[in-house]
Image 1 (cartoon, rainbow, N blue to C red):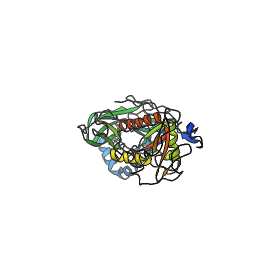
Image 2: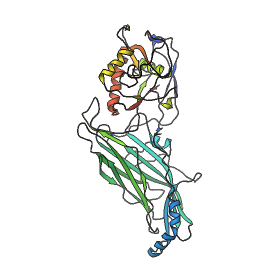
Image 3: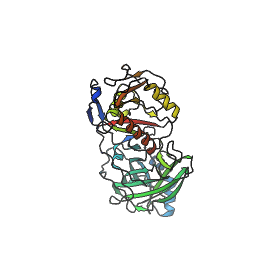
Image 4: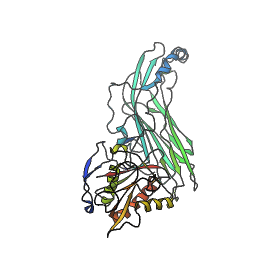
Length: 422
């Protein structure tokens, strides 16, 4: 499996004043911003578990009769941890199998991802296990724990992994001897290669862990399939009348394919609902290209992520049709525009996006000071922009965009953002 790479920690957004290219000195400076460490996947509901204890308590008389026959005295249930519960979450949780990304803890209770890849998604939530005396209804013990869930894929192989960890950080009362165990399943175009979550002691000094590997069945050329993995875990104790109700933890859908436009040579998997970001830096070899994109987004054109803070945040969508791409470029950068020596015409939104000059609705063109393009200034989400920039930067920036589509397995119409960093 491809190993997750290091991610910049922290959620502070760094502002940097971006100087325009030398031939565009009339344009005022703009702001480039560092990527946020993590983003919540807002298309899914917050991962708040139902209060299982509310369903267990009405069954206490029935459970008491069963407990008397078995010689037990209690039952367990799981609920969200109440606000104000004393806790000491570990600052650096680790996994035996694969390091848990620290940025996953930035947005507790949600599935989160980083804009740099569609290959990882993770979540943390805070839960409590109550031990209830079946005869009196009194809570006679509690286990406070964090649940860590982490799925990672590879864009170059049709196998993906899913880890679960239970990290007890506190507790009291009749909890000695409690074990946790689980089972992984997968529905859709997938099979379970392995599932390892044997019974493990739940203590403050022991991290309970499970790992499963899955393989997509969408591996023949031209195939596309989706898969939904689930970890189901529960707790047991000799003094309980029955195991706890299982907790099911299901991440967003995984999409695997052997049908990638532009490079259908290998199968691979990504998290379907993550829209990645094409990242250009103003301090890299793409300075002028990055400046033009940022100016275009700042004027209102789409492609900026909501976290960037510009007007009209909205994703772009990939466009695969070559003839339509050509139409987009010919409209935004017609051959009638003079090309100064060493410069070439750059268009935004990209010709390889559905928001391009021709396919994006036919709005008016705009440009910026120093761009040497015969178009007026403009604002708003409709239309396109053009600017003469360094020819090498333009060419290499386009090649980087093509690689981005392949690396992130971006299909036709898939959404993505463009983020300009310092």
